Image (cartoon, rainbow, N blue to C red; front, side, top):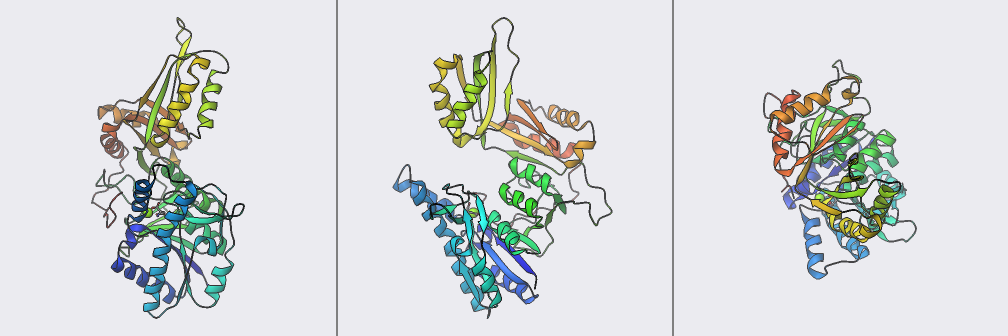
Length: 423
Ligand code: ASP
Ligand code: MG
């Protein structure tokens, strides 16, 4: 029998009625003749509520206890969904991540899955049960401690289970109908993508599109698991994330898949760095020691008159203060002039595999920003992505202008946001 793995996010499990609706949906899949394994997120915004609560109790909660606390959210969902399924005359067994065999490294708060040993799941499926697994969590092989996979990690749980079980598909149920060519909250005429490649989806997720957890896409690509992103509130086909979107179709792939944006970054500029060997190495060493994740980096040519240069980079806002402190500590040693910090920035990324073979994409992108009156602060590119940093207040306008310039607008409003608070 074929195995289908489904993931339901918090907004699909917001209250008792929602849970019953999800249970009916799971049972339909079971009735259609599949073995069903479900990964569930915590109900509604309950993860955020637990985080708030922790910070009320302690300004700096120990990471181990934070994981103990947060994993409780998914355990509540898994038991309630299993109960609702049994009420429909089917049996379900819920398992924590640890019971389900989700083995991770030992890093609290952002653990990586290193193995899945789904013995208990296959036994339960063999006994005819639907299996419900608490998402976003696992157990460290080394420390035996409970870990979490980082915010949004239930997507990754689902795809990892699908890979370990040899599932036919991993269905990610969410509160929109699929992956759109831009955030429908900004571009009302954003278009639903029928198919998108893993590589494009990876770039979009890394560029701030929140629809799928980045590591879930990496996992899907590595193991060749087709991911179907769709709404739990409608019966519509969603977006298929696959290796080769043109396979089986007659249509040529569009050049551009979509426009992503990100408002979670800040920019730091190290002003007046002496232009000599080893200075950049020292600066980025200090940032690495402070566990800073860097994104874009730009170094200007030094001014001949002064022999000084500026180095700018972007990073998650949440790492901003730690990075500034780490750089301040090496000021005398490096001999730079001063630091500038700016968190009123946003990043716009144009993503599409067709960029490789179509010249002129960059100039068209920049021209569309210019005609929208948007100034470009920094630029970076990959083979299939062009990103720019702009002022935060210009983000919406820049996304809309780019979306229109590349003819991505749909003729009708396709995007319905069914649930969720966007928190
Ligand atoms: N409940 C966790 C979160 O809100 C994990 C997830 O939703 O995937 O981040
Ligand atoms: Mg959530």
